[in-house]
Length: 407
Image 1 (cartoon, helix red, strand yellow):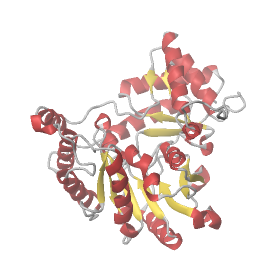
Image 2 (spheres, rainbow, N blue to C red):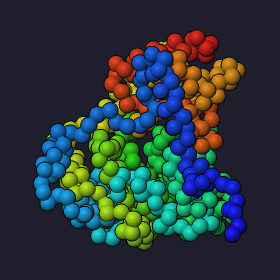
Image 3 (cartoon, rainbow, N blue to C red):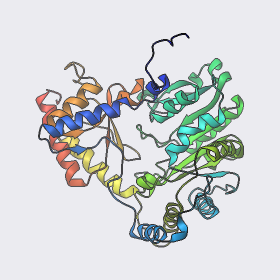
């Protein structure tokens, strides 16, 4: 009998590539700050601080009480939900997708993002992902044995990707390109002309386009995010993720969907048919109620205006404190470049975020959690009411002045 080589027992090496370590690290900082007596204002995690509408909660509660709600759901989602999601896609974007073949129910969009590469790629393939980008984009590739190629999003190009900068040898090997407009952490918006060009680019290189539209209902200043599936012919080469977490304050319910190309949707359906039993039926019924409400006369203002008001108040307060941060065009996040004097003071993104939290109790996420291009930035989530955001701005201002970071 031979002895196995020494290794970290019962933990796969690929877990080190998932990109979640910084969030665990920030959790440790929060515990340290709380132990030091600070009142925490957590602007780190992008979890909505409000719940869904009373009507959505009523439908959920009534469905939960029914005895027939507790059998296994279908892994692809019930036809009632898929049909309503297809109807909403047409109402919201003018897009027609077949609920049978071109739409799949998910346990939140992150569920689909985590598994898509397993379904559409082979080990050794390449996938193009944004940098900075949501950590699961690259983490999912590590699980699938797929090589990520980071596509830089830089301020000099308005944080839009330069498609022509991607080397031909990468495009020859790439299975898909993943983008996120408006994005997390960068809330830049892409227009129809960009999506049209992207679809043409994907056809030329036989790429699947994966568009994460989790923030479809969080556009500001009259901007309404658009679907890539609005581009004629997009169904031939694109899929799009949608989430109820941010759009309807249903983060804990875990429901979303993938719409688009029949082959890619079918591949993920086949995979998930072997690994889970789908979304709890009462949650699907609540999601149907959310979509019906969004399409009805009682839709209300939706989540966008709330976050726009928070954005305006918070950015204004930060500027009054001496930190001139750009206004995001959409989403619940502020992508804030560190003050110009931070580097001279020895503060990179991580040290800035750590010292801010330990000295003021305000939690933000270092930009390098989202990729190498995130160095020099922090992400701030607008997930508190206006009075708490104002208090956070005051604390940040005191911190900046104490560090000599204001003009």
